Length: 428
Image 1 (tube, rainbow, N blue to C red):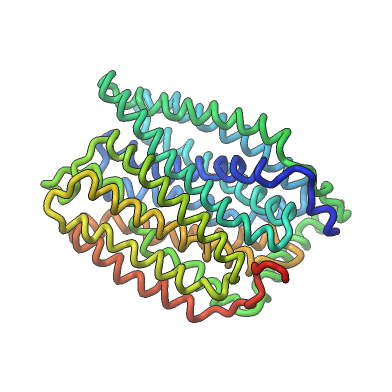
Image 2 (spheres, rainbow, N blue to C red; image 1 turned 60 degrees about the horizontal axis):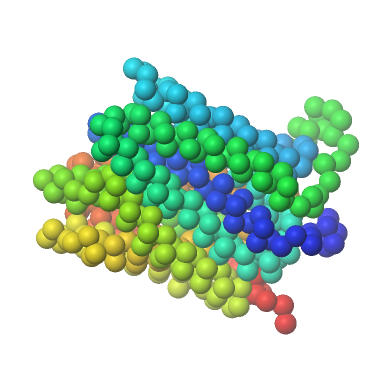
């Protein structure tokens, strides 16, 4: 790929924010909105964590089809196709919710959303690495992470506020969530249309003369073989699995903690209040953390900021320890804690994303990046599946203390990996 192929007159600001907002919405729908929705529909914490934990599976196994995204057609075409399919799948959830068999039906369609979203991730991330120079990748990683997380907060913020308002006005919980998923469906149709114009054509269709099944299979095997021949691959996999260990458990129980009554150890917030907390104060903290993380990483490089960012990811878990022990904390106090937690997460997650880009460099960067995110998803899936059972066994207070113990893994793995000091720094 020539350097000129990676430049375009169209500013990255035209497409990076919307592309990664679109990438984040299906993930938050599957991983977070589904948790709140099922909680409001009466499922237990154990069932919610277990069954929604299985929904990580498409992201875990996506490396097995990522080479085909890398060697067939273009990343741009894959991205647009998946956006159309995700829009259709969200419509399927909206229609399934009012049915008597809503749980099994919505789980099946959520898995379909997961599969198409994981494929969208492969294509969009590959497109990002092809369309930008190395310095641009480092500079915009904070922007892409921020808009990805803004999508997360918008999903568990604005859309949850809307669901809560409809619940209160109509008294019909399934209808409220059907409206939410109908809106998500419409948004993805808009994204697909917009990105048909906004995404620059920076690559040509794969043309490596893969004319036979044998050629494709050989290329497929070579992609994986090359990944596992990389230096420090074992240490890198440990890092990918453990850096987010506390978050993997927290993400499944934060919303149930906010929604559960005080008698169950929770904070007793309404659906709408949970949406407001994450949709206002949370989004400000996340945005600031992500943007600042990207800027400082571009100036001093990933190697310099890796451990400070790991500490940022870890120390913010203390906010939930405090909230679980506080005696009836006020809404402003809850907002301050959420701001701190979201800022720390936005800042610390920058290092993780940059390391995945760093480790994926090479001829098959798109497929290798998806393999990295597959390990990331596995690191989220397995602890998350057990989180509900752990919490219901030991209670919220002990559970949040346990996540603080897990922060030792987040910080510890940063001492194992080796990074080129020049990676991501601005060229002098």
